Length: 184
Length: 184
Image 1 (cartoon, helix red, strand yellow):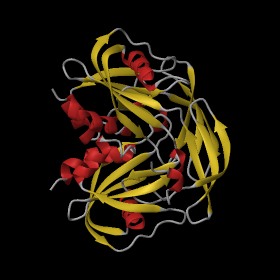
Image 2 (cartoon, helix red, strand yellow):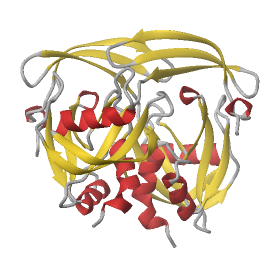
Image 3 (cartoon, one colour):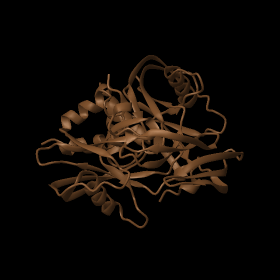
């Protein structure tokens, strides 16, 4: 198997420092040995990982959430997603987040792949699931989580991506991975 | 026009604190007033913004870079991209980054839209450009930047996305936006 430690691009860790551990993010600064032998600095966030759910209703529509994203100072149209709790399995997290955010349970779950959202400064990975056979049982948002639920057909979702109404990269990436399977 | 301050999901800033200003990221912690009147905390990164270039050769192949991403402890296959310098216009940044990373200049530039990469904890926006009429003039990587250049046909790029060889969300998102225009 390919060994990333023997990759000619490999950067070896010299030292690592936790700069800040917050509620949502932990920020590190590491000293590294670069491929040419010189020394460099890498600042990055450690993230517990997350899941995203492409949840399709029987009439083909997809569930979206509109959620205020403070970093952008505006609400963002996204596919349902959430952060993995300590010790939680990704698919269990996907079931929990779908229920909490949208109030639906799904009978059929299918993994669609993984993505890395900010490779330049975060180790965050998002596992993408396709959820079908949905049954509405009622939303249970987290404390301090406020969101609106809406639904779009696969064609309308693709159009919203192409005309700039969807700019969230995890949502664009997941639509790209899922769309071939979503059209009746 | 829609006023985001009157959005029912709006979170008003009570106070803002710069926790850390590094070489690559600035981390803030703000106190906010939530829609139900309670108080919350938001930790997030301020980022200068970036560009991504979908650069297509006359034979339809797209230029990719393989670059070590220390946060992930491995090299990642990505479309060329880079951070906007202070005062720099996004398209000027795209021309500079394409030249520095791949050694190509493009005769034709077309904006394809924008994305937000980490809406949960960063304000980073990436503007996507399609670059054509490429001429090779020789790469000029930044100090401390080590990368390999490769090229894939649009079909091979889509296949690499679907089979998990491409996991970088900005690259997946840009392929989704660009692919309809990339096939002969």
